[in-house]
Structures are given as structure tokens and as C-alpha cells.
Length: 192
Length: 293
Image (cartoon, rainbow over all chains, first blue to last red):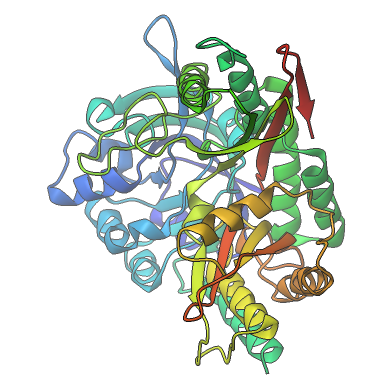
């Protein structure tokens, strides 16, 4: 498996293909439903530098606040990505993201956006909140905590060998489309 | 029996157990799945899941960050105040959230703001039933949002599926639901199914089915047969862990039924993710606590 450092270049990302297993190290940001709406309302200068050439993680963590005011992620698996389908391609383009981490895959609009902007969809194992929290040694800062609450806030985090699978790439490949088509064909057979 | 607050600590422990310790039969079913998957992403996913289950148990930390809605069935003897039990359970949810066994998981639907303490309108969801035994029995599932979003309800007949008002129609609806869910409910999942009922009772019964041990057999022979067949056929669909493709899409299928109105024939499916979190406790008259599997 390859280790991939964040921030990452477009060229490296375009070299990834569906089925690749990679481990991410470096800085990324979390964002889910409220964040995606907010990111599209206007260009958010304050978070933009944390997104450029990095990835956004669809995650609503369980967070502990330490006595010194710092935070730790206690549990931090991915949430279902498809809810961000209306916004994701535009968020990628507008903020220069190189990838999205989530679960369940995304649709045609995002897939086209990945190709256009040079980005990938990275699938983390859903529910693996402990394995993934351990790959997040540090929480750097947080945006919109008051407004969005803990699960929906945008957390800037440092990750170390954070395990993900490439399930949608920048060449139009989608494991989710493949599996869906195969299972629909099988269903037809079973319901004959 | 029981002053205000007397059950709170027991209920906090119930929540801790459910959120951090996956039942043995669920772990065994996931292990069986990993043995069936030889390679590739499916095998990596199940290996990660098993590793995660172990870490959560040893650290007493949530298996999944979406700690779900506590859905709770409480049997109680005559004379116990259900208002008191509700107050204690709601305090337990707030305390378990403060101790981070639960995520602050309740959002005010109109304002969009998180209530911050895990409790909210309709959360936790409690069902009370009086019984003849002198003890209180509490059974709970933690039902996560990703899997809740792929639950569904079919109204038979369904012409598109060729599904009539019989068990063959039920089979067709359930298989269709599994394909629609793909990996989005965090496969491999457990299906709780209710045939019949109405749009209120059926979802509750489908969730109550999730309390059954994975390997039990329905006492109704034709349902036992259908459960077994749907488990086999569901796994033939090839969706696999997380929808990565593979042989392990479902861990179990549990089917119950309710009577229905002449005009209605619902098939209601609740999808439970692999993090099939549940716990149960019995509280004797004198307050002695026994943990149930």
C-alpha cells in the first residue's frame, strides 16, 4: 500500500485508480451537511487554505475537550457521502480539493467533477471509528463549532497513515457503479 | 420500587455496553464473513471492522461515532412508574453523552442546532409494556443514521417488482431493498422485517426483530424458511462489505408479522449496520441487576 502525503499534487492524484489502498498523512479538514451548504453560500476565506490541495472528510466525530482547551477525536468514522452530491463537485472546484473521504460513494455529478478538477473519492471503512480515530493524532483547530455543533463543525486535523480505498477516480472509474450494475443484474435473475 | 434517579446509573452502563461492546454472535458472524472473503477490499474492510470492534471494547469507546438513536423496550411490573423510568432513562442518555459513550446526536429539526446533550424530542425512543413478572427488563438497540436512511417500506402489490400479497411478494420487496441500500447502510447488515401492520406499528416491529439473536430460528416455519432463503440470496447479490463487492452483504434476516387492514399490505424493512449494537438488563424487585445477552 502507498503512503500519500497531504497536501498532494494533481499529478499524484491522477495516478490513483479504483481499487488502490492508500494511507494518508498530513493535514485535512472535516465537513458534512451543514458545512457543504455553508461552503457554497459564498467563498469562505477562513477555511479555504485548509482545503486547497488537501481532502475533506465527511465525518461527524465524538470529541473530547482537554483541560488546556485542545481537542481529541474519540471516535471518528466516515458518514454517508451521497447527501453532499448536490454540492460536492462545486466545492471541489471552488476550493481546489484533491479528494473527498466518506462512505457509500457518490453520484455522476461528483464523478464528473473528480475528472474535471483532478480529484478522487476515498472510501474509509464505515463504522471503524476507533481504528480511524487512532490515525488522527492531533486536532489543530475548529471552525463553526458554535453554529454547527460538534458533529457538523469543520475540524482541521492531522492524520497519520489514515487508511482509505480509492473507489472513484479521476478517469471516470467508480467501484460503486460497477457493484450496483452487477447486483441489479443478479437481482433480475433472482426475481425471474 | 425505585426512587427518582435510582435506575439512571444502570441505564448509563446499559448504554456504555451497547455503544462499546458488540455482542458475541455479531462478532462471530463478521468473523465468518472474513473467512469467506479471500482478498481485496472486502477482506481489508472486514479485517478493519474486527480490529475496530476489539479497540472499542478494550478502550470502552464508541464502536462507531454515530452512536445512533437509543430505541428501548421496557417491560415493567404493575406499580412501577413509567414516568419515573422515562426520566431516569433520559438522564442516563445525557450522562452517557457527557461521558462520551454517546455523541451529542439530537438536532432540533426546525433550527438545525444540536441540543448538545444527546436527548431531544422523541430521542431516546422508549416503549413500555406492563407484564406479570416482578422484575424490570430493558432491551435497547442503538440505531445509527446511515443505516436508518436505507430502511424502507413497500406497499404490496407492487407491479414493478411483480410482488403480490404473499411471501413471494415479501421476498421480492426485501431483495429489492437490499439492492437499493447497496453498501450505504454499512454492510454487512442485519435486516429486521415486519410483514403487515400499519405505517406506525410496522417500523416498530421491524426494529423489535433486531433484538433477536442472529442465529435463532423463527418459530413460524414458513418465516424461518424465508429468513434463511433471503440471507442466502441477499449474499448472492455480490454487494459485499461496505459495497466493495463480495460475498458478505447480510449477517442475518429476521422477519416478524402483524395483522393488517384489508386494504393494506406493508413490507417494512429496518436495516441495521454491522455495528449491530444492543444490550439488555434485568432489574430485580430488590434492585439487583443482571446483564442479559
